[in-house]
Amino acid sequence: MAAAIRRRLAPRIAVAERLIVQPPKYLPFTVSATVNPAPGTDRRLVEQAIREELHGRFSPPKDRPKWPLGRDVDASAVAGWVRSVDGVASVPDLKLIVDGREQDHLAIGKGELPKFEEPADVNVRERPR
Image (cartoon, rainbow, N blue to C red; front, side, top):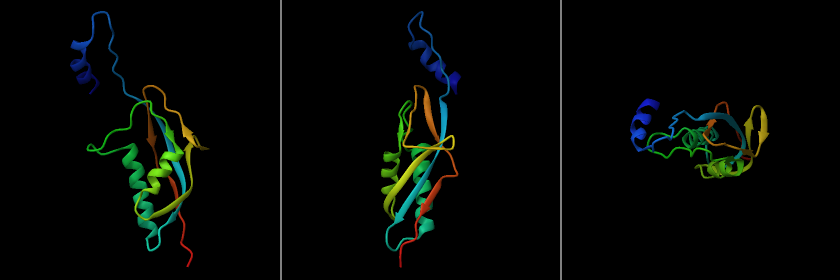
């Protein structure tokens, strides 16, 4: 794929400029989240929907936009996405886990992309009866 990109861009590069085509550097992370389900929801289905949302954001299908190169990941933004999942009432706690350490922010540098990895720790609490 890099060769095809290079062939397409090379004619547009000015003389004496250099074109370097290289893949991004992936920064692995996962998520630890505590979620309160909405009344009348199935906890397993809510957990599955949350995982699908996370994978969809960071490994999107071809019909969704890709994560922009160099864009940081914030736990508050991820919590917002999780909160928007059907069946989620609230997200009292969400942390990004990088190299085994909890973080609120994952800095993404130039030419880097976040790589969401399982296992994520998604704890959908039982609703009190």
